[in-house]
Image (tube, rainbow, N blue to C red):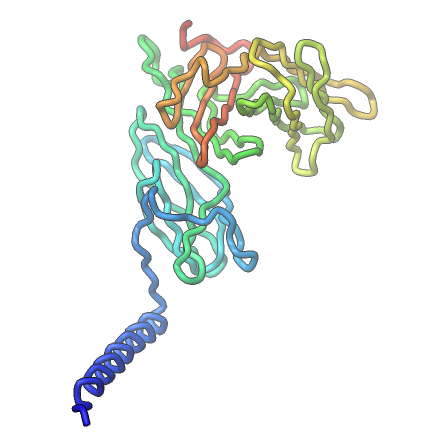
Length: 307
C-alpha cells in the first residue's frame, strides 16, 4: 500500500487554514468594524443598488471661507466613500439614522467632482446617481472681495435637473413669484428647464416664442420641464411664464446658447464657459457623452466678468 501520510497532512493543513479564516471573520463581525479598501476609478462600481438598500441622497452642500461642507443620508451604519475625480478623498460611516457629513479645506481655484459611494452587503460599492460639482470662478482683475464671483456649486444627475447650491452671481433670475435655476441639456437636443415658484400654478416655457413645455409646480415649490429633442444648436430667447387661476402672473426671459461638442474641449472632464451674465458647464459622463448646465445672473447684475 502507498503511504497515506502525505494526503492526510495536506488535508490537515487545509482544515487549519479554513479554521483560522473563520475565526478572523467572526472577530471582524463581532467588532462591528468594516473598512473597505479605497475604490479607484478602475474598480467595478455598481450604479444600481440592491432594492433592500436606500440610495445615497445629498441633502446639503455649502462653502464657507475655505471649507467645503457636504451632508447626506444613506443606509444606516454603513461605510461611505467620497471620491474626487475618481480618487478617494474621505471615508466615513453613517450613523444609526443613516445621516453623515464631511468637511475639508478647498482652494478658491480648485475644481471638484465628488461622487458618493456606499459599501453594501459583500463589500460591493454602489455609486450615487448624484454628483457634486464645484466650478471655480475665473481670475478677476480689480474686483473687491464682495464683488468677485464665487464658485458655482451644483448637484447633478444624468437625465435630471441640476440643483444650484451656490450661484457665482449671488442669486438666480427671478420675477415676482418665479425663478429660473438652470437649463440642462445633452448632445441629442434634449433639454431640462428648472426653477422654483412661491405660488401654485403652471409653468410654460417658450424658445423664440415657440412653446416647448408646460407643467404644474410641484408641492415643494420646484418646477421642471423635460423637452426631448427640442432645441438644435443655436441661440434662443428662453421665456418661462407662471400661470395661476388668475392667468399669467409673471415671466422670466434669458438669452441661451446651446453648445455642442464641436465647440468645446472634450479632452477635459469638466469645462466652464464664462460669460458676463451666464456660465455654462460641460462634464463628461460615465459610459460616454456629455451633459451641459447653463445658469444665469439676475437682472441688473453688474458684469464682473467681461467679454
